[in-house]
Length: 88
Image 1 (cartoon, rainbow, N blue to C red):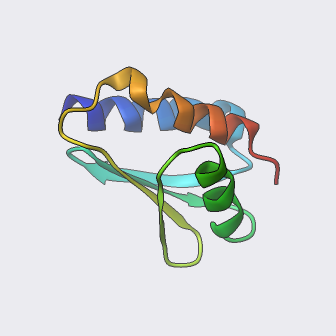
Image 2: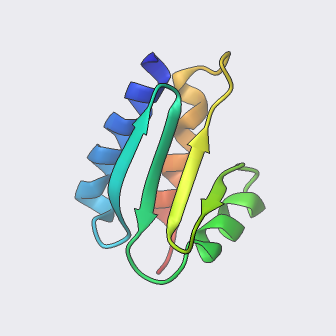
């Protein structure tokens, strides 16, 4: 539960820097999801995989994060780094 809250909090904080990239942050428990604003989710998905981050595509624009139950908050940082470095 805490990890999910942390991820959603960080995603909402990242809207300040990535508002042109993402929107509609949502989730429950350790599950979090957001929509890519421009284009499809495929480009971000490929970039994340190339940097060793496992994310899921859902539909045309959504990205989902499903964490392990034994993950620590700092393990999510590569996701936020990838989002910050993602070029539209």
